[in-house]
Image 1 (cartoon, rainbow, N blue to C red):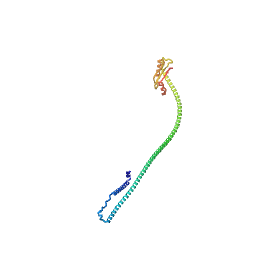
Image 2: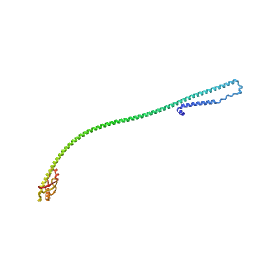
Image 3: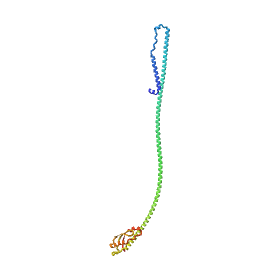
Image 4: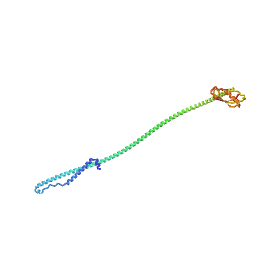
Length: 309
């Protein structure tokens, strides 16, 4: 405690120590003075005293008393002065102690105030920290709400855009459906028209084909009759031929009417008759063919029954 006071109040502590030392010196000096043996009185020559005048003795005694009185007074003055200094030092020491006590009280008060201030500062810092944390939480919550609101607005906008897009797509789909229905109806009508037209064309083609077939068959029959007639004109009846004899003949013809090959497919039963027919076919070359070249495919290989009249 004393060391802390000496460090904290060095000047006041030095003054107090000096006053204490001064008081101690005063007591030491007083003690030495009172205990100091009195100076030996001047020796009086008793032998001479008998011879000295009484008045001289009295004067000498008075002088000695005066010296003693002055010495006593000086001593008393010195003691009073020392007592006064001691009282003053005591008062100063008491004042210094009071001042030190006051300073200590002020220091304690200041320390308490500092402690209170530190506590208040810590509380204020804690409250400030809590307020900052609350503010940060509030800010984060505000940011979260703002973010959610922005997301909600964006989602609403996206939903609106999606709804508009779907409505446009639905409208476009309806329009496409109408267009497709119109096209389908037009296609159906066209298909029906095409079907009817194709049916008519098929019927016409069939009619023409039948007519063409009839014409071709007629031309084939006519051509075969002409070939048969020419073969029959070149045929020389053999002696063995009898009435009613006939044979089947297959003839391969090349363009121009020349005969490439002749084959009896059904014999008449008479070899001479059959050979005479083969000879007649070859002798009749070139065989007559239709002028229409497209008809040659029907005469590339012909088969008929040779039945002379």
